[in-house]
Image (cartoon, rainbow, N blue to C red; front, side, top):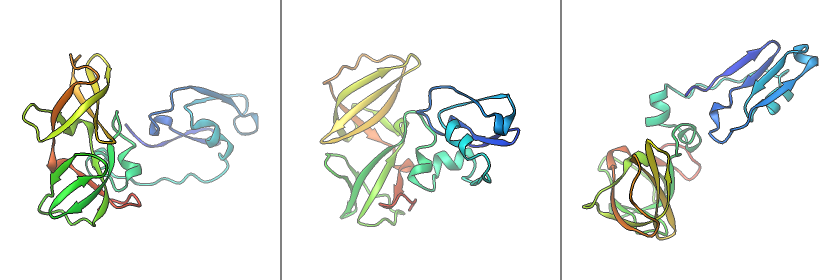
Length: 195
């Protein structure tokens, strides 16, 4: 996935691939800016066309690997990945990460220098169903997509998303055990900046 702007004559239309929720296609006719050429774009196109006379601000977010593996903010972390990253309020207590309003607990990585309260980011592929896993939860929703299934796991009041390959026989209400890949955790301050 790339974040960029497309130039259609005099108007710069932001690419709607930035927002995974832009599903529609908007066709604009802006004779004042584009003659009679229609411009097609996603859900961001109408706003972009209204502001086409303004300079385009391009922000360097990093390489695709940086954006995915080392996002600088929670906003950037949510730009890529379907389903989106799990962002959970958490606290640090005696060398343990505690996800608020849940039973999720993880040993604090030795190199982590985090404040007492923070946001914990966990990519869905790093939540792995594991009969011997240290985490427990209940399945509250499954989304079979063919090549994979998105599993919604509830622990206390928090829901964590996981991805499993193919179609699964898991059902709503099933109690499961799972693991979280500690080496791939993301830590953000309460304002959303990477720690």
